[in-house]
Image (tube, rainbow, N blue to C red; front, side, top):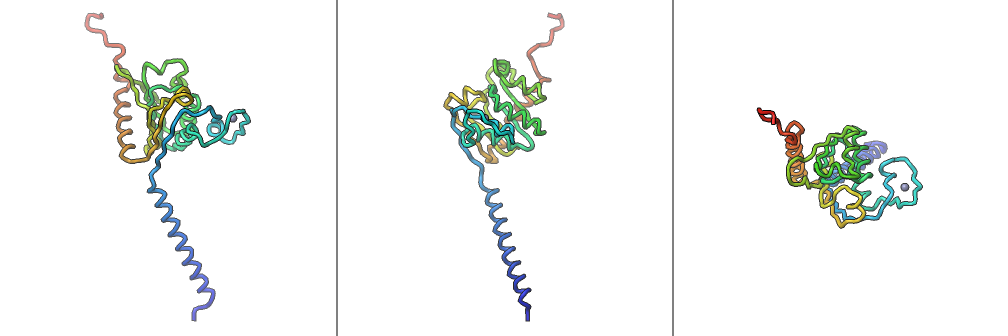
Length: 215
Ligand SMILES: [Zn+2]
């Protein structure tokens, strides 16, 4: 005859196994569910300190809501653990630059591609990124480097109409699509790597070599 304690242990084991299976099933379901999000701008000015300075209790008069599109964008960027590829025409938004610098400081490999004509414009954050040691390459051919996309951890693409400027965030009608669709991620990564090689400083042709006559 099986003692009562053994029956209880048996019952408990069965419950634990079924709970474990349920948990595994839910985790697998969550992994399979694609990340998709669409953000629209403009959005009113908000305080981004809670995201950019975690632990800091900010008492400024701006709204501190985390629901808006700028917060959502910052949250997606700050989820980066290994890499951030950023390919953007104009970059002058201070909170987005702080997010990029935060990732760089955390040891995330950040690479930035931008447009040569606009990177020196007033308010551009490209100089600050370079000064902090972020790898930046820029276009050098005619025609703008007009992309506006980012790839987080080689697994999530953020793309759309929006330049990374306060004008775009607070004033313009803009859209951003965030997706972890594998086909999209691969295509954007390939475009990034192609441009990264094309804009290698070793191949700059701003200063054509002198010909044999020294002219
Ligand atoms: Zn604040």
